[in-house]
Image (cartoon, rainbow, N blue to C red; front, side):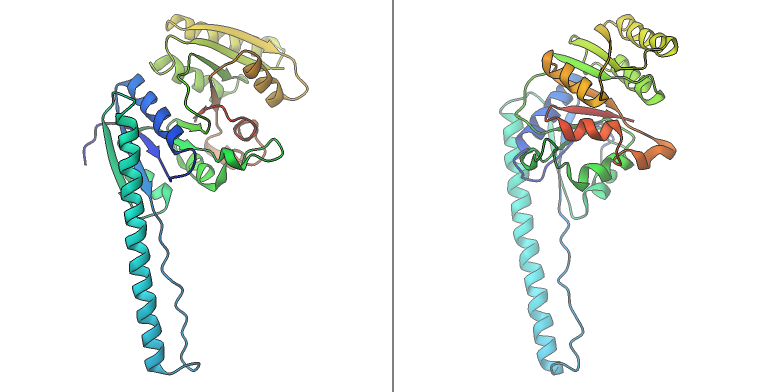
Length: 286
């Protein structure tokens, strides 16, 4: 397997597949990389209980043989579907973007499939299940949580129809992971040339203001157009997302917890609240 890096697009045939393909191709084109289309299938074997004592040996062997045939047939159908999905996704990207596309099919759960390409992955693009939006919260599913807990590279989470981003916002709280998110933006061509905003809610103290000013200066010294915003809001997430909507910002950069704080990532953290409260694309940085 080549070690040339790619942007890994995890597709599953859901309604967000086109969005995932488009954002992955956009991401790849900005970094002059290829797209790696990944479809992982996890096909459990049929449950085969020991029926001795309930039926005769001959009958049991016949039923087990039929179960085996069903397993094989199901695998064939899933493989055919995977082939069609990958080919359709590749055609979709090739018709809209000038990037190279490689395709991969893995018989495993999603995380092991992603980790199989660990040396190649520059970033991961996944779709959130926007159609499950209920009570102002979006069902992001266990796959995103599992991958986000294990990944050390940026993850772009998307759902709505693709729009070429022209502006970005860094959700900033003066923490180490927020500072790292700013460093990632500064060191990458991904968001260069866009209007940037670093937005911090509360934290109205001299130390936080100094860290915010340093973050803005880092981006400006790297050639970015960026403004700082220190806002007041009863709820930090509401304040951030209200600012994003009012200023029509296209993409949000959010820091995620790392190290000993992994457990907090999807257990009530502000990161989680942002992910489940907006349909806008989010870049999750560790």
